[in-house]
Length: 527
Image (cartoon, rainbow, N blue to C red; front, side, top):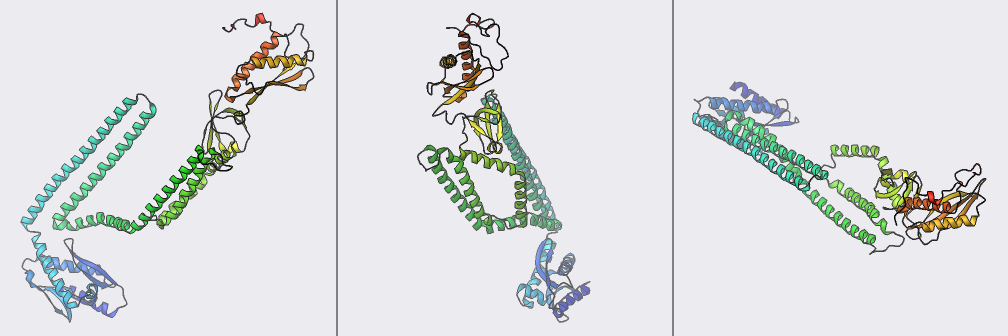
């Protein structure tokens, strides 16, 4: 075996000398999971195979209890520098090995000789009965400590979860039966429960890894497995640490950009809030435009900040990051066309001043009060107390009647029509209509009510009564009161209303005598 190993080492050295153009591989010589030194070989004789052979010969020498570690020496074999352990040739020190360590061959040989001697002594010492018993006791103690720590972590997270549960139940009792508070408390409880479960799992995982590494390192035969586990844990952390350290300058730049953008946004908001309150006046710029304009400017500032910060985001130049950005862009473009059109329409409505919150409007066939103006939709509350949600794109493409805009300064004109026969003097009709308007409470004094003769029909004259109203939200009430008073006045003066159609003169006028105004189930008004 020793002769074959020596021949292999000589062949490796000869191959290196005869083929200098070959790329040299490097491998570590390990014993009991501890690296002794490194060797190099050309690809024709893999370095890993050479290192495994050297480690096997060192272990064979250590197993031979008759071999004295002091017999490890440096010598020559076939003109090459070699390390021997008694009669066993452990390895040949090549020029490639010396180049790897940047030291002369002789110096490297003596250094490796000392390492081999120490490895044999340590291998034997680790396998003495006293060392094995001590390792077993330490492993048992570590296992007991691990179980106690695991139980303690489970108990702590459970108790913490119970305290959070009691606090949330107490909070729900204080707010009574408010559903939103109960739902919020339930969401908080679920989130805290999941967080505690995650902490429990992480704590148990960390304890398990530490316990395994410690126990595996106690026994020589499992030291290698312990080292592998250490590398599995440490290598990702080391990679993350190096990446974090390398990214510190970029992170500092991102923090600076964040605070600058935040400061600019704060100053911009203060400016537009002053415009909204009227403290700052801009020509041809309405105060109600201030906050919508601020939102547009805020979006532009944030986008500009993201464009500046993007190259400095860790991992932004990776293929995964670029692929995710492309995917999100495609999803956004496919799914947001309608939303974007509604948002643009919302801003257009703001700057066109079509209406504002609180206005009485009619959009298409829907009439109601504007309760909320969102980026994508507008909320109306109808006179029947119905909530109607209309997309802004539909509003911008249709027509809107605003009853409140001019009513704030000039009032709103309510108008209703009646058809009266030609035999009734038009002056009497107009006087009766004006009397009905005068009797109606809520009709504005200015502008004064007036009457138009809209048409001379085949069977009747159409009169239109116009009366002012200061509050468009009372339109329906005033119309109802006005119609009641028109009926009363015309009945008082014995004039029949001919609309909606007229066929023939009745034998008696179609009027309601005053004594029949309150026929059952109607009742006279008190007072």
